[in-house]
Length: 155
Image (cartoon, rainbow, N blue to C red; front, side):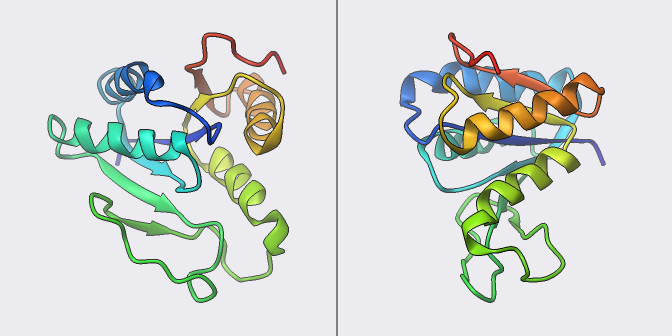
């Protein structure tokens, strides 16, 4: 099993970020040995990240794409979307309060993945919080962050 990578970005990310995102995915596969990619499904960046991994899989059939679920599948059932290898709920029980589910799940993914590809250009919202959290972990050598924004937030 190779390295793992999680994606987090602003939901309003547009298609203009796709070329640099696709290049980052390719680099993470070829240079860092990433085989497992994890992505959510609540914003524009998530959709772009999933598409970049699906396209990379045409050249690298060994990589896997997994949809991360912030809510227990018994509470919010979801079928595995086309092009994904499966879903992942990173908690052992249903005790995470719904209002904290997304942020706590994103933190859990930063805690367990080797790499984070992000598109963060402002402090607002969950993306800024997660990037700040990840930077603290990066300073300890626990995760490596790639921020695709031309104006990365200086957290």
